[in-house]
Length: 368
Image (cartoon, rainbow, N blue to C red; front, side, top):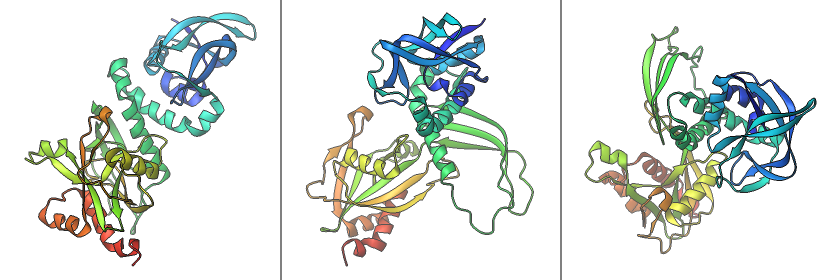
């Protein structure tokens, strides 16, 4: 069965359409009168609103398979029959319109502007999201979209800023992929790969199975008050420590959080510091960027020390209610925090790393 669709938003991008529909975009220019395409408030895609004027777009003809894929991708939208104008006359076409009350009207929509700024992230996200087609219901997949997008942003960041090579270089770095499966997808994902990798001495490994826990890039930020030589640590319940069987799964850490798509690590560090401690951070000092456990986790961290006034912050409780966070701040002298490394009370990697960096740079930060 053939379906005629009028597209007015991101799916007018040929690359995104191909990823989502599974076939090339073959389209005719069309106009929908009595409506406008505007940005959905707080989003990077448009919605259609009834209005004077017209919305430009394209008309495509797709089969059942492509239509099912497009419906899966366009969650939050319903198809309605509308009359659109082609160069040869008017025809009826299905149009994706937002469900009632789904999104408020935002600013102006520009496909060209979106292609230059948000297109790469949308395409990378779509590649992963469409991998859920047939494996999840549209409702289940829609709930995972923010996390799929977060991991897509991490992949783009990795490609644009790869880890430097060290000598001696591997003769060829090409990993030979076999098959990939994702048996679990939610806030995190589990990925299983069958692959072969180049060996240092030449040649390739046999085809092996490797499993990784997939997360997005994140930041950590340790507040430091040079005037008092105090640091602020946050303490909260951590499920990983609980799963290990630790009777005390409330760990001490720097403030931390995931980098939102489109957000810089520096902006994320200041945002997370405010959300988790209520502290307005001043100058950020870069500690390092690293994989905390690359044998099993894709997570990549950017760590900072933030200059801050920590007066009155001890034992404050903060965190986002929307994320069920319950975070207590502990303000203590730097030397006391360092002693916690010896006792094991400071038992998280980013905290030990950040305290070590601060130990090497603290006199400079204090003006000594």
